[in-house]
Amino acid sequence: MRQVRYAAAMTVREVIQRSTEFLQRHGVDFPRLQAELLLAHLLKLPRLQLYLNHDRALAEPELTALRALVQRRSKREPLQHLVGSTSFVGLEIAVSPAALIPRPETETLAELAAAALSKCATPAPVALDFGTGTGCLAIALATRCKAAQVHALDISEAALTLARANAQRHGLAERIVFHLGDGFGALPEELRCDLIVSNPPYIPTAEIATLQAEVRDFDPRAALDGGADGLDFYRLLARESPAWLNVGGGLFAEFGDGQETALQLMFNDSGWRAVVAHRDLTERPRVLEAWR
Ligand SMILES: C[S@@+](CC[C@H](N)C(=O)[O-])C[C@H]1O[C@@H](n2cnc3c(N)ncnc32)[C@H](O)[C@@H]1O
Image (tube, rainbow, N blue to C red; front, side, top):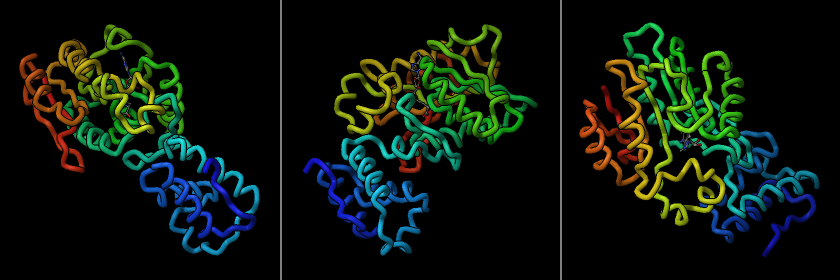
């Protein structure tokens, strides 16, 4: 079936059922939850309120708008793109095809880096978010550490436009300095940081084709591709970030499944100390911590 079919004056309960079946047929994970979230977004209601409105009939314009959303979701467009934002460490972050959708596992990186930044002995510690995307990590650091000066770097102009808008929405336009360019070369020469945080692209090139359609077809390629073994950006970070760190500075970086051992070896061999891998909330090794 090509189109999701709704009849006139269908109730909330009926459209949820119809939309769920349609999304299920198109292989969308958690189809009922997705149908409910789309309808809740459309009706501007918290999802649980749908249950109190089960017998409410939808007007024709509402059915038309829902049909368009469900149709797009069936083509695997991510829910976050359809609703326009996501929550990251309790902060609302606008999303778009310009940047990777912030992931729950990256919240572990944000929490660890914010805690380390708060413990810096310097009164106004300086942090850099390498590969900022939506700006979620830079915004989390600036929100949690009021004294910090935060810099954020990305190679994508479109991502930086989104990140700037997100910073503004959180009242942080004056607290985060954005830099456009390819790697550390885009930063002012005199910049020295106490902490670098990064969720770099870490998917091995050949694996990108095997990812879920929502990721493969809708996250920017530049946010995913970590080179042949997925480790290109860690080699860059291990080699080049010391020049941008103050003595005793640290790096927190997210990594992918199966990369922990190679990264520990790489950072230990490159003169970093106290190299530790932390687990995320699903108990997977996810965040590398290393100090100079
Ligand atoms: C995995 S995304 C992370 C986005 C965001 N920090 C997050 O955690 O959701 C990686 C980001 O690195 C950026 N990037 C890729 N290559 C880069 C480079 N050579 N220099 C700077 N940024 C780069 C991409 O544009 C992308 O926004």
